[in-house]
Length: 124
Image 1 (tube, rainbow, N blue to C red):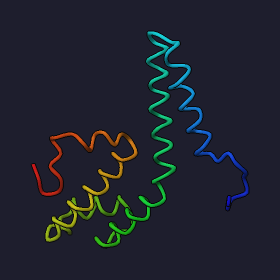
Image 2 (cartoon, rainbow, N blue to C red; image 1 turned 135 degrees about the vertical axis):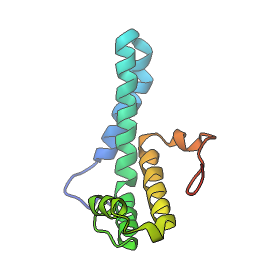
Image 3 (cartoon, rainbow, N blue to C red; image 1 turned 180 degrees about the horizontal axis):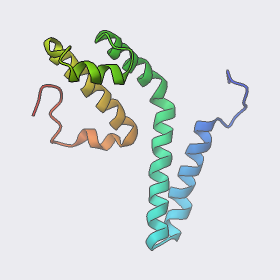
């Protein structure tokens, strides 16, 4: 059941439909610059889909990580790190930042997480 004021298709379904159309029908019929821009549009729409799917949960997790560090926003976290206020909690800071980077990659391009060079928190 739809909880918002809008009927189906949802915004996520519309974005998915346009992305699939570009992949299936438009990409094969293009070349050169137009094909490149079509690929860019496909990637952008895929990112929007992932953000719509994961964004609210990621925002909540990000806020919880900040709260665990005693911060209300990213600016405060950056200031406290710069001023050395969290030097005794560097493992917690690293874990929070790593989790944020992971969440961003899940939206931007989840394939980057499969790269063999990823060391994780406390790694290289």
